[in-house]
Amino acid sequence: MSRVLPNLEGLDPTELKALIVSQHELIVSRDSEIEQLKLLISKLRRMQFGRSSEKLDRQIEQLELRLEALQMNDAERVAAVPEQIASVEPVSRSARRPLPAHLPREVRTHLPKQKACPDCGGELRKLGEDVSEVLERIPSRFEVIRHVRIKLACACCERIVQAAAPSRPIERCVAGPGLLAHVLVSKYGDHLPLYRQSEIYAREGVELDRSTLADWVGGTSRLLEPLVEALRRHVLSAQKLHADDTPVPVLAPGQGKTKIGRLWTYVRDDRPAGDVTPPAVWFAYSPDRKGEHPRAHLSQFTGTLQADGYAGFDQIYQQGRIEEAACWAHVRRKFYDLQVAHKSPVAAEALERIGALYAIEKEIHGRSAEERGEIRDQRSRPLLGSLKQWLEETLGKLSRKSDTAVAVRYALGRWEALMRYCDDGHLEIDNNAAERSLRAVALGRKNYLFAGSDRGGESAAAIYSLIGTAKLNGIDPEGYLRNLLSCIAEHPINRIEELLPWTLAADLDKDSRHAA
Image 1: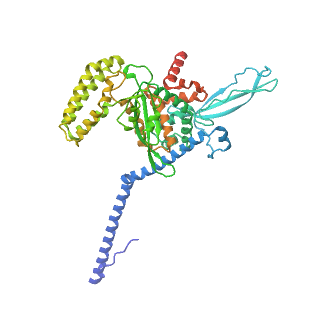
Image 2: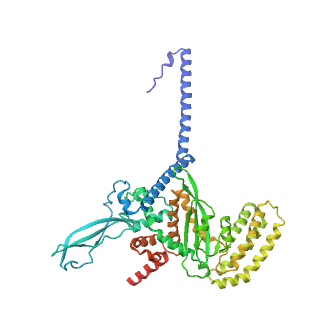
Image 3: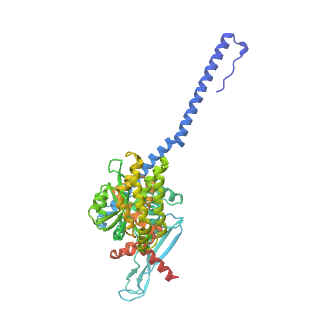
């Protein structure tokens, strides 16, 4: 509402003075309100775009991920229940949405194998058909595959024949092998949590709830367990393994908090020594880092273990069945940190000496174990002897409590195990093969924060094993899982090794060459 300015000519000095005072108070009040509004707007902007918003978004994300993990746990529990029990006590689910009508349809018609009535040999005529739909994902697009099973009836005796329904990776699941493979690789290979995948699919016009995706992941992980066991046997049959572990936050049941579980990796890869045996990685989950877990994992292994200085391995080495080969990369890393932090002359010389050892390894990479052993004897062993002598002399000149002394003592304390790679051309100078296998876990951990339970950690280990092994063999993980899930449901369990990545990929290549 506008104010009418009074006639200043008719005001006496007292009234004029009162008017000026009131206007001044109004101006001061408005200035104060403007400043308050500016401060409030600034605060809201910080909440929207600054650290407060990031913290709030992170809290929301953690709740989303917690819900996703709990739904996956439920799906895995249901998948583990025998079919007879599951049919008696079905889990309550919301009504399934019809598959989107706008997606293209590919019709695949399945005719019975019988050309005549199997009972009387009479002529068969069409009686009707059963139609079911499976949601499949073709690279870069969705489509619905319509399976049409023609019913034929005998004109003489009315006997009905029909093709068997195509098998599905997960019973009564509308997801085809390609879509299941895409969900698994997106989560465990590309580090996309299920709720983010759900949002991506919605943008493509396909509504897939996170709970539905969780059901698929849980059911698929159960289906793949026999294959992962075959992969474990292949890895542990090696004479040399690389081993490492990494922490994984796991949701503690009923507490809403997380505990720290571990993912252990065991890598079989002898290609640097000219071996053509397919490389593979097996992941195992444990709820903590006690030494009993790697002892159980390696209970059937005999040979050399290349690993870091984790104390839990010590009891394994003491048994005499497994020999330790230490990692020069860990030694080098300690001196590298010193060089970056302090520009230490001792660290610089140590790095130069270790670098000479690595230069030899680069030169002999891929040669036979025998040739590698000979070259190491001639060139690496003298350098190692000189390095040890220098480290011992240097240690005597250092303060016992200095960081440099700690790095030197670490190397000298493990010297016998660090020398072991020179005794066997099959061994590597470091444990980088195991560390490389854990990179996917480290990246995924930043995105989905925690596993929903110990069972969820075991499922993650299984999928990481198959994806990691496919990558080691130069095989596209999604393509491999798509082909695997297309046939595993009907594949004989006693021939499960035929579905390992390198075997299945080779068979598919052979079939494609014959078809061409």
